[in-house]
Amino acid sequence: MTTPDTQTATEAQRRRTFAIIAHPDAGKTTLTEQLLLLGGAIQIAGAVRAKGERRRTRSDWMKIEQDRGISVATSVMTFEYAGQIFNLLDTPGHEDFSEDTYRTLSAVDAAVMVIDAAKGIEAQTRKLFEVCRLRDIPIVTFINKMDREAREPLELLDEIEKTLALDVTPATWPIGSGRQFSGVYDRQDATLRLLTEGGERDEKLEGPEDPRIDGLLPHGQGDLLREGIEVASMYNDFALDSFREGHLTPIYFGSALRGFGVKHLLDGLARYAPPPSARRADVRVVEPEEEKLSGFVFKIQANTDLNHRDRVAFLRICSGKLRKGARLKQVRTGKSIPVNAPLFFFAKERQVAEEAWPGDVVGIANHGVLRIGDTLTDGEELNFRGVPSFAPEILRRIRLDDPMLAKKLRKALDQLADEGVVQVFRPMDGSQPVVGVVGQLQLDVLSSRIQAEYGVQVGFEATSWSTMRWIATEDRVALDRFLRTAPSQMAEDHDNEPVAFFNSEWGRKRSEEEWPQLKFLALREQH
Ligand code: GDP
Image (cartoon, rainbow, N blue to C red; front, top):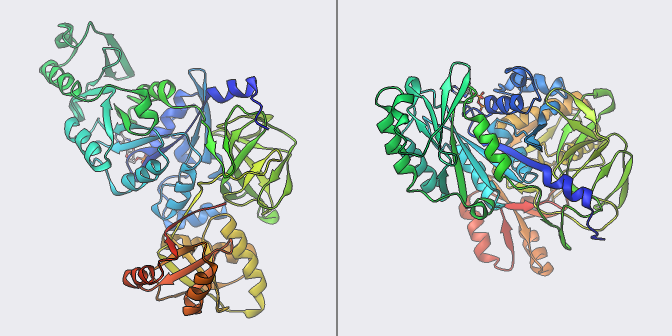
């Protein structure tokens, strides 16, 4: 069952699967583009942007939803660099879709954290970082927009260290910022990497004391740099173990817009980011080099073909080799799933993959059989954990204008819940379903899709609930008693797990106190 395979081991070793986390506007799209340019996956800057992935206003989103598939192509971007295969998994920028982002982070082995040099750590950076921390994902930091007025490097590093409780080690040190930005000093190679019109010019130094520094930099910047190098030396040295355990982040400074510093970052990733590692499943730990295939679905995207209601499930491969034409076992149902045309995603197009390896993400077209959190294997009964659901704070009751369409609505909600578009809860008193979302925008997408794809008109009614919790316990009797206390406030989620709604924090706390036999969970790992 756990026989290792040499080719699988070799291929897995070459994979680097990562995501970029950033607050909107920090420069994620610009950086992505520059990475793809370096990896030869696109030829001109602007190609990613043109796909319309960025800055979606509400109407943009609807249009994109209607144009199905536009963002599919940019969901996973594969490129080769320094002999390694990089899989960059895109995360939606809009904060209403942060759940999607959280799920994507369950499928990566490393993350790049982009920080705006003038703004430092922002709300969304922090939230996403916390998710990475839950899984000890190693993080490489890129401090972007150095070509603009920036905060002092020392201040930025301190902020990262303090607000995120994360050790930092400057891999490069910036020389000036804004108009005075001259480039960086690479501490590892004792090299000045100077910003030029056309890109970069490197000057290898004898060391930080090298007298050539003054001649190579504009007037006054020599002292500035020497001072900087001294400050930088007070930080921890880079240590691979601490980095891979998620305790230490190397920091690169640059300007994605000018394409500067991106290569340093990518070299850093190539050097330090881990290949796929062992993953914990319910029954055992799975090693990537195992001969047998295993993987899990972390994302579902409604696809190009409206008529066939085609959907693509994104499978992160954890072990083994995926061959075109393989049949995989869907562990949840025991069904056999044919993988006749696994899709590989490149920045520009999708291609049918002949084979894929641990760390890779392939798209599997299906008609609603696969759902988020599903484990697929070569036959073994095992389930990967860790695709999270978060307790939503916006809870709305569905209003169905035409009761004849109840069955259709049920199907629509089931399928959209499979996709992770919304969370659906069915109240135990038999009343209309309740949907839970992170942001208002999700409700708009939901109603427009139910209308367009299932021909059902729905509305949403406010509820008095401000939060919900999953209820976990071994004590069935206590659970039954609790559920009977207020059936209209109790429901089942998409997997028939019990949940309770609450009007206030106070109400929730009171239940927790009164029912010590029950656990009220704000986060649930799907299975
Ligand atoms: P995202 O929302 O994180 O994807 O950010 P974008 O990549 O779309 O960038 C947001 C804005 O910042 C855009 O106007 C970019 O042109 C600009 N920008 C991104 N990187 C840089 C940079 O290094 N320097 C400067 N001056 N502007 C940048």
